[in-house]
Length: 614
Image (cartoon, rainbow, N blue to C red):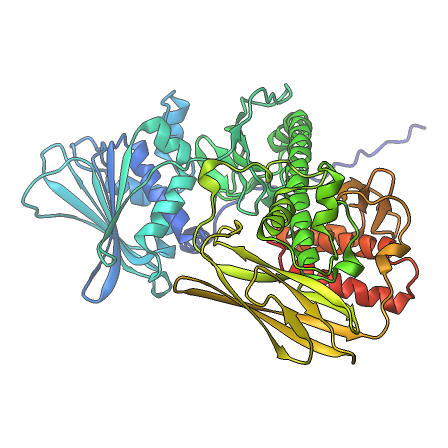
């Protein structure tokens, strides 16, 4: 007996097509989706460019106490209907049905729109929109729309002189857009429509009647060195245009993402995929233009992460490698230049500090190693007798002209135009000193002009003790000999120098003590010039710096967290390196002192050094 098999029929799942239940609600959402009112202004200007306009005038003004924005162009105007009249009815009733999209499909080039919603963005700018365009008969017609209203009107408008093109007016502007100045519009359009303006040759002028100013929109110009030879990988759906510039690092440097000449994003780092070097390094300016990317229709300020975007990211990968190599070379060159500048500044500050600090304690360096021993001894002499003017000139000239063996070698050259000008400042050298009781010490005057050149001509000197005891020999000379009193104490020595009507003063502090330890005699080895410095990257180690005695170089750990923090600001980095110099020099030249005494010396040297760190 055969069993009958019952075939069960499969039930079909319910299916259908999406549709909009409330069309006006959808239109309201689209009209309010543009977050940036300046982007809406750029949309209006792009419509004029698409209409083949050669001149566009954007006017910001005020009437009846309210601000308005007007955009006038000499383009082809609104497309005409079969009667030769502006087809406003089609514009208002075919939202999301872009005429430009169909024109591009037919092969028309040089137009940008594709969504048919740009006109609705006036909701984010003002209350009312009016568009005026002439028909074939030469008569102007006007369409008006109002925010939050589904209605529009078209009427014939009376004007004295017919015109070609289109006038678009938004009035009144929203209360929050009172600060939408002509200058802001000009700057935004210069970046947003940079390539569109260049390619079309359109001239855009912004007239700010309330600010009584006019601005010409010039496509943004980038600074830095234009990079050549950047080749994206094959496989992208279209050509990728790169115009990148390598410039000095700065937070204002950005690479914008464009599509067909219109900016999508002001910085490509707004996309997660590009939040990495080289894009975040701050060295690059320019544009990346990918015409095949798909945009978010509402704002046109975002990219849909589809297969085209994925292909774009893969194509840019070899470019990123090339850019990273170029940036590393730039960083190395900058570091070398910065190191030379920092070294000169630190060594100059140290020399200024040694002019002010006690020579018997800070006579560490033979900074005139390339000079004869006779001149070296004369420079740091502690002789008790008065010196001649010529001796003092030799000493001061050598002190100011000579650099260390690691300097740039330029400060010792004196040209005919470098002779000193009028007196500007005076310094007592040494500025601070320690003298045993009943002993003598020489002090000299260092007079300079505004450019820090040494002044010798037509000077009158007056030395005096203003606080404490002691005696001065030759109080009217360029140098004096101070005779310490028999009792310890603090002495204030004052110098007044006059050159005609110009008068400058300075004071020095003398500590008179009954004992004196010559700290410089405790140092071992021969004296060398002021040290240089170099870097060694050791991020996992805690040391900040070390003194290489054989090479006379301070090795700085540029991987230390303190160096990384200091390097974010030039002045902070300079002070940090100067303190490392002071630390190493004090540690090496005061080997017999306890830790607390070393800290006192470091503070002393840092104080006088950083005071001249410019």
